[in-house]
Figure 1 (cartoon, rainbow, N blue to C red):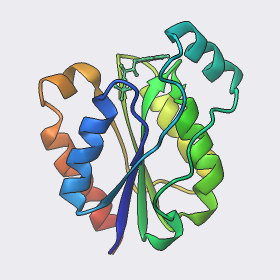
Figure 2 (cartoon, helix red, strand yellow):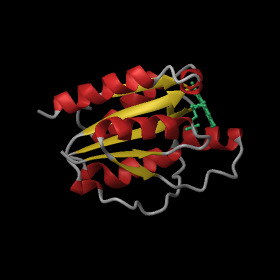
Figure 3 (cartoon, rainbow, N blue to C red):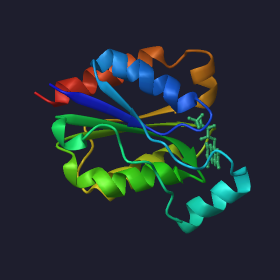
Length: 156
Ligand SMILES: Cc1cc2nc3c(=O)[nH]c(=O)nc-3n(C[C@H](O)[C@H](O)[C@H](O)COP(=O)(O)O)c2cc1C
């Protein structure tokens, strides 16, 4: 089975989880590239709330070549980040099977994951949220392994 982990990360937390997950799944990895780096927190929150379209660079990997795509985002304003919204809008029709994960400070992860699932229009093979504090203390490793096993199991 061929899997892809596609993620956006502004400050590195989601990247850490994405890399661990890609290792556990034996997946290729796609770092979504966007122009949010120079923007301030309040500007990003406003853009997320208004759903202003974030621009992203063309992906390096063709999602349609994978049996499973796992998409990861930081939670912004209790939702998915703008770059991940753009990625899903542009690629959701290519997904055969999809799962989601997020990192977050303390609120809105469930809503963000549900919104991602709704946007893609089919039930997720799995959903995982990891607190940013747990990423820093590597508390997340067992959760990532369990999540990887669950989504691999769902593919049979
Ligand atoms: C613009 C912005 C909005 C955020 N909004 C939320 C939020 O609504 N709820 C939450 O729990 N954390 C929120 N956070 C914290 C991030 O979700 C958290 O730090 C995450 O791990 C960052 O991931 P990254 O390092 O991959 O960019 C926000 C961070 C930013 C920059």
